[in-house]
Amino acid sequence: MDEKSEKIKNTKINRVLGMFILFFGIIIFISIAFTETFIGQMTNLVAGALLFVIGAGMIYQSMRTMKKLQ
Image (cartoon, rainbow, N blue to C red; front, side):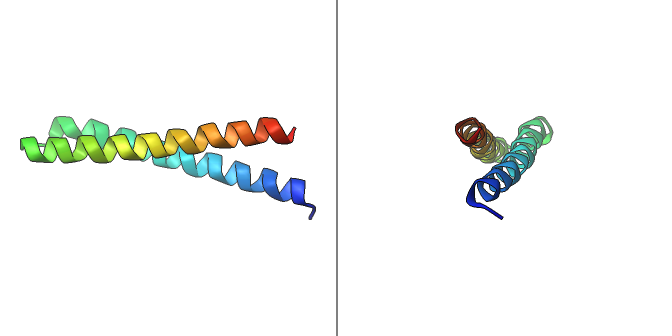
């Protein structure tokens, strides 16, 4: 396999992984409504925000890389 097709493959994998992490972050955001304590809600907020940002960043980076390769 040549280098360009390897990068495209890795970019697609990163996009799918980013979508999974983003989806998981959204689920944690939703779980804030079902958490009883304030500390639990803030913990879910921070964890959800981190996962959301990481997932969105991975998707954005893979889109930029894919545009550059094509």
